[in-house]
Length: 428
Image 1: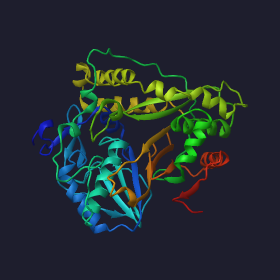
Image 2: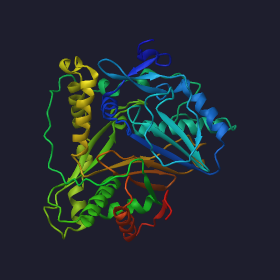
Image 3: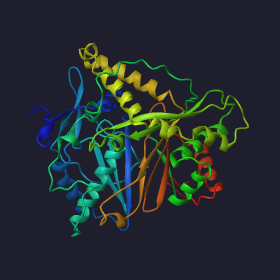
Image 4: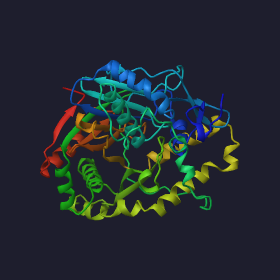
């Protein structure tokens, strides 16, 4: 087996996990793996044969995606697989766990249903931004096979190119600072309420709305769209709680580090921070108060100097020589516990991908996009959104049948003057 060589990643047989990938790999359970979903709804029904050909063609151009998780003596790693993923018609619930053992398939699946193309992928392979980049590249090749000439591959991978070291390497290590000291952060006081879950149950509700309506609503409170949606989530938790909320509400938000460190990584390169509001047990909190408290928090915590310090501390902790010498089965127990602690440190999470970009010849064929985070054993409720062609889709996923929060969120947005069209994978 040829070891990882960043200068020739097209031909390497394995990849070391990146800083975030180690956590997701160690956290997976027998019946659960951190799986999320990105999708595009096209302007015509999908041609599955061409989609399969496009996927096959990408296998050599995008080697960091065509991998499967393997356990080593001291760490797990990603092994290249020549077994091509098979495009399948969707016939089950979304973001089911990706099988990590017992087959040679890469740790993702590509699904289609009428006009929708979906990519579901194990989080140790890549983050949401890299997943959308792969989806757009897949669609770009798909339209190339239909005779469309692509004039600009800035926002997609071209099968005519060769994968680069920048794409396949560990961006966390590349952009970290070795001088940053180790840290042992204190778990903040957080409002967290465990909710019952149903195994392998996924209720997804999409709210489709005009980007301009959401921007206008956010501007009314002088906050960003991300801060506005985080405030909506906090307001939802306050108004659906069974008793007064006496601890700070914290919404965990991932930030794409590529936008701050000029990286072309096709793997994980994101950092999670949280925005917070403390209601102090009050039951008369107004939405305007939450927005005022959140205003500027996203920009403050997105400062490149702060981000570099945070990722450097994480990388240094993982590179500790004492930790490296510990056998992987023991490491896995520690990683699993650390993942649980990280999930209990916030109330809920929100991911705003932003605007999906694609080659100009492909973009008109995408009616809208979807982003569904998937649940965890500790966080059964999740919210994510993505915009394309002036439509923002807010997707709420849950692994339990209660829809109280979903109803509150979309009714509140409607009360703000936002025209919302709601779709669900459950019809009752």
